[in-house]
Every structure is written in structure tokens, then in C-alpha cells.
Image (cartoon, rainbow, N blue to C red; front, side, top):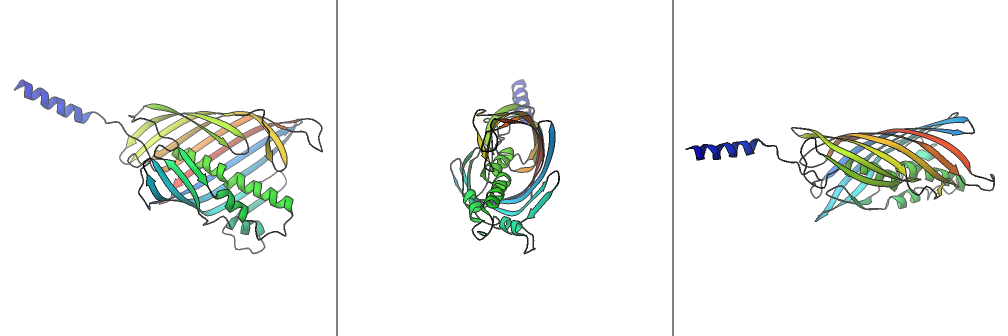
Length: 306
């Protein structure tokens, strides 16, 4: 009788022990995920003691349709559904929107050429971005019917669109809510570390520590904190016809809410603060490097729409 009681106790106790969560992205063929992504950005620059401030708000809605699943590889066709970009400088401002109906708004009409055009993305169940293609070609093609614009203006606007909506920019946003999963099953309060990088006008690494903070019903909350640091500090990167190298460091933190069964994110909020120096390479107009001190602060909010 005592042996039976002990076995029964062990069975009941084992049932009460929390099972670890195998967090990964689980989807089905033909499933379509829709997200809105809003980034608010402030860039403060100091050159020879003179301060300038640029504010930017970037909004997009994107669909991710699962076309195929091969072992650990999820093949996705992506489309932008809506796009807008607001820029505010010291003495001027600019606003473009893919849904503008103003026929005189050439820049918004160009932006609308990016909407509903398919490009390809492949990711692993653990959130690693394996392939990304087609978006650069879409941005280049958006200017085909606007050859009357000065080439300098085309280059400037194309650079702004690539920085706001191009492959590296979107890859960074997607990484922030997909490249988040631990390599092994975890329990509440377990931690793990992930290292990623980006090349969005500069090259930098992000080393983030994650914790499974809480799991309730159909929602799991993950919190992360991390360090951002420039890579290739002696390499110059082209920006609007000029060349810069960067020595920047910063911090990042995220609050992520997802479905623990599917790994699909419901909402993610990320803050980043970065500071340091950039160096403008000598050119036809300047004889030596110009040092520009930079402070960057941004907030990105990602929300599931369906």
C-alpha cells in the first residue's frame, strides 16, 4: 500500500512540475502574418560645436505569407502594404505617404511603387534569417517612370528609401522580433544570449541577453537588454555621395509578447540609444577628416494585425 501511495505521489508531483517551453517559430503553409512597424528616431549631431537635430518617423505595414516549409527552412513571400516617412530638419520638413492621392506629390507616388510588390525571405524555426532578396530591385524600379528628376535628387531619395525601407532596414526590424529564440527549451526566468549584426549604412554588432519573464495562458513575455558596437571601425561607408566611418556604442532593450505555442509575436517594443563619432572622409571640398559627434535615440513598436 505504501509503495502504491509513493508511486501515486510521484505521478502527481511530476504533473505539477512546469515543463520547459520549446520556443520556436511554428507556422503553416499559406498562413499570412500581418504586422505594423513604427520607428521614431532622433539624431543629434555636433560639428565644431554646432548642434543639429533630425527627427524621423518611419511606418510600414507588411505581410509575411508562408509559401513553403522545408525541414527547418520557412520560405516566405513578403509585401509592403502601406508606407510613410516623415522627416523633420532644423529648418524644413518632408512627408511622404504611399496612400497619398495628391497627383503633384511625386515622392509619395514613387513610394507607392514599393507597395504590394513581392520579395522573398527565408528564416529558420529558431529565427535566423537565411535568405533575403528582391527588395532592392523593387526600390530601384520605383524610379523608372521619373527620369525627368535630377539624378542627384533620385540618388538622395533612393538612399532615404533604402535606409527607411530597404533590405538592411527591414532585416533589422524582422530580427528584432524573430531572432529571439533560445537554442534549447527554457523555463520561466531562464536566460540566453544571442549575437546579431546589421549593415544599415554602417556595420554594427548587437549582443543581447534574453529572459523568459512570464508565461500566462496564451502569452509569453520575453525581456532583452543588449550592447551595440560598431564593426569595421576603419572602413568608410558611402552615404549620399560622401564617405563616413563610425565609432559608436550603445544599448538596446526590448519587451516582447508572443504566443508560446507558435512563437508568433503579438507585440514588441524596442528602445536603442547610441552615441559616438563619425568621420567624414576628405573629398574635393575638404582636405582632412571632419569629426561629427552623434547621439541617436529610437523606439520601434511592432504589432500583430491579424
